[in-house]
Image: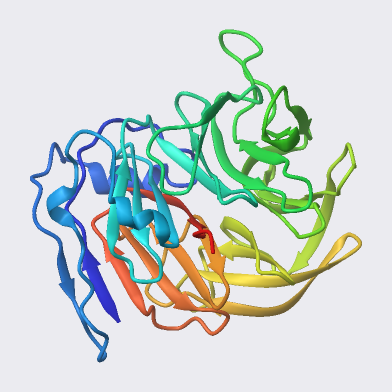
Length: 345
């Protein structure tokens, strides 16, 4: 397993969602501005050493190696630090950074490999070209005051953004959590909500344009809901086993994949479900060895990439095998979400 240690980034804000607030608070207790140090890369298990460009980190401005635009790129939203870090994939070599966000959370890509970054505190969704450091478009989220996860439909180009807290109703109250869907990722969204839900977290489209979201109800039970393509209402999906502590939601090309941060092994686990009507039938699970607090994840072919804010790390696992991580990138404050943008062929 290759371990890539990144220098700690400066803390620029702290307003994490309910999912990660407790563990990040523990990480930050008593911390101020940490000194920067060169990245250290420790090869293990016969893996070759991977170099990280630590000398170019945290210059106070965004940067990107020009040659990196021809690479497949892994984007990691590091919520508390306010930065999005960019790595070549699968080499895990740091090649860029986008700075100046106020708690970046969700990350997703469209068919053209443009990258969307959801910023929680400002409520703005930024769009970047592959390898770009300046946004080419932005959307002010109209669904609520706490946008979190996002996904772009490969079938329609629609952008879905999960709002863990609904839009303000008055100075002291807010509407229910909701999902804002922007047709072809622009304009005024359609807002979908359910008064029986207390929190919504992450989402993912399948290849047909159906949207899946996880969250909790007012009895603190985990829920998995579907917004079928062209539907105006959510549909509850009953799944077994029961997910105790929901994390990210993904699509692996065949199955809806949902993370549980309290797996039976003590490590996080992701379950694969086949959806039939209002039922999710488990077809397998992947134990993420070494990760006890996965939030979001991204599946790229036979690799699952997940973030662990408890350890300040992003890890790669073989998918669907799981087990011991093959690569670990450490030194993050709050690796909240990650996505991969593929280079043009």
